[in-house]
View 1: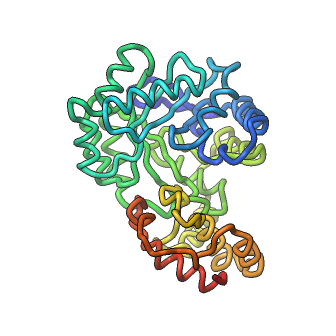
View 2: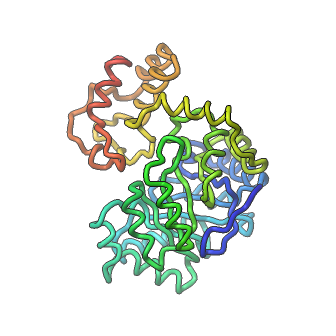
Length: 336
């Protein structure tokens, strides 16, 4: 496995990290096997969050016996000092840890968020206190709006930055990478497969690692995914001209207005599984699996016809997608 230094933290992390969102979908025993196989194959960076239901719990339990081999990152959407202090304590308890390697401000997306975080009673104050006490080792920030994230890199307390980057989402990335490197920030890439939209995992991951990033964290919930992803970091090769052309062709089919399956739109008050609807629509429109997609859409607990048009999902979407319109279009194809 190739390892790179996570900026000024000095931590040596695997170029392929472990994204902790999908592990929510598997049992504790399955999670244990998946995480340990990742360690066996050289993956040492594990990223989770307070918001990922039982992801912290599963990762903590799986890593307990091999703590010294792992670099553990988590994050919180808390914006106040009190709430962040409580979340840090909860993360430590949930994962059964004495300390956390990297604690990140989760999805800071606008000036209002940042002002709250930086206020005297803001979340950053709690992170600094926890670092001083040895409860956390390093502080980072995550977000989806690259132009805004660039502004936060001026903060000396911020040691790492995590943001979406893939063959589809490249706007603003070169500038952010250049600035982050110049300031010594560790660079963590999320959404490397554009929320599952990119099907050729090998090419997608290698594309990102050709750039000046530290680690990329695809989500994993199966041993097969661990094997495939680790293979990239264990035998990293630049893309050939033919491979680059193949990736470019796949990107062209996606366009820009598509769901990245970040799940910030959830929960829907009407129990519509919005990301799954869009995933099935992608299989319908891009992969010629119309009957397959329709059958699985009909099996969902709630169809798009249950939508009341409240718009809460759009308010939470970090990509500002017209979700209500997109749902209506998907339902027209899949059958409401």
